[in-house]
Each structure stands twice: as structure tokens, then as C-alpha cells.
Image 1 (cartoon, rainbow, N blue to C red):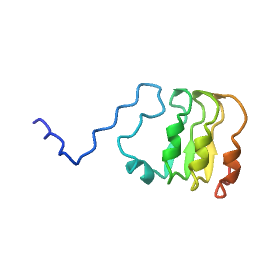
Image 2 (cartoon, rainbow, N blue to C red; image 1 turned 180 degrees about the vertical axis):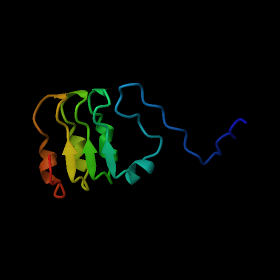
Image 3 (cartoon, rainbow, N blue to C red; image 1 turned 30 degrees about the vertical axis):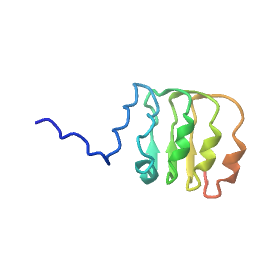
Image 4 (cartoon, one colour; image 1 turned 90 degrees about the vertical axis):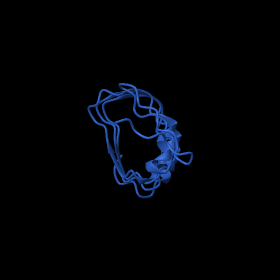
Length: 110
């Protein structure tokens, strides 16, 4: 059966991520705040880490190792104040580590 149309108060569904894309922009930031762990190692992800990663404010673990991510680490990662572990090895990231990462007091492993 077809699904009912969304109510006027319902946010539109998020755009699906394209193959190899880290994630799409969320329609609402509320679900993103509930994500505590993200392990996308060995997923053949390509392109840059999007600045929208900074919206995942409850994130404690971020593992993006062994992909083909390129470009700099976005400074918005500094907004992830609950982050305890971040693993970005074996990608094609360039540039310096953003100074904002040094302010992540919960960070135990980089």
C-alpha cells in the first residue's frame, strides 16, 4: 500500500547519500544529535569530509579509516565536544590538523 503523505508539521525526508558520499545533509538536525558512534571504515567513501559533520554534536566515536577521503579535515570537527575517538588513517587527507581539535577535551585518541 502507498504510504500516507507527510503531515504539514513533518520535515521532508533527507536526501539520500550518493554512492561513495559520506552522508547527505539532514532534513532536521535533531536525529543527528542522537548519533553516538559512526564507523564507516572500509566503505570506499570518496571526496572531502563535509563541514556538516559538525552537526553530529553527540558523536563520541568517529571512524572513517581506510577510505579515499580527500582534502582537509574540516574545522567543524571542533564542534564535536563529546568526541572521544577519531580515526582517519589511510585516506588522502591533506593539510594541517585543525587547531579546534586541540580544544576537544574528551578526545582520548587521534
